[in-house]
Image (tube, rainbow, N blue to C red; front, side):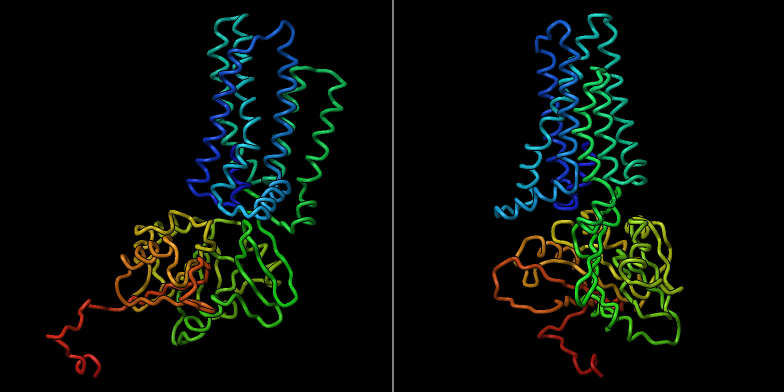
Length: 439
């Protein structure tokens, strides 16, 4: 349940260490309270099964409320309507409302069962702690490695609910209980089916890595990943998002045709980088394996040309493992101001990128940040970039720029590095051989 919640919330608040720590902290905090309460409550004779039955029913219900995409979407809609925009505050409120009861009852049930079984055998306390830990390990591995990748997050939610109801039935195996199970399970199934999510939200993929949807507008098609518009494309005109058009027009369309160039795109998006180029060699790298199929079928409406290769891998790991160098590297992983992959904004990562560009080659990074350096992230990112790429750099704001606006208005900013020889020499009042440098 905890892993599913972290995955579902990443659609709305990202998956940074801060967000994850809030969820885990609240989850474990209430579970600890459950352990205390379960170890102190006076359990009446014959009442343990009844208590466990009720607990598992509540766990099943809260699993649905806390993990179903449709309900989470409603919650964040309310947050924005109440003018609560901080992702940290949103996550705190969400966690205290939806991640309190079920974790509390997890701890409560474990402590209560341990006490109950200890009366029959003093060895049961250690046994139940061991099985509790084994269940946590197996549950975590199964959820991330098997369930979410292969059956999807939505059907994993249904499975968690079913398992909770099975726990309730084991505690109190009565036919009349099936009515309560049906009341919980039927709406759970309805709002978590692929059909419902597709019809209601346009979701095509909902797995361990991404929630992907495609929306049709009068003049363009939009590809969304984790609630963020990743790519725009007009099938009639072949025009993509403005920043991609800038890169295509200035760095790809102008490439000489004397030889085929090697182009690396980290963060494939909708594969619109070099969309009309059938000559040069492209390598698209993205962690989401369904992206190519979804893009071809629902977004681009056509197959990628043979000169484009798609590799499913983490961007940093790909750069670490490959020895290839590229004429042009396009980095399009900083797709949103609150869903920034923290490992990809470091000096170490940028040095890894720099090591993979050929002499005379170019690196272009699209970043969502403040055009006029209004926020701390923009300023620190700029410092980080210029620490690695000290010379031959360019910062291109895409679209409208008003440097006098104090609001933190995000914009597409393309950072560009030209890998050309540069001695670092500067002009001083004592030495200014400009004429020799120019001519």
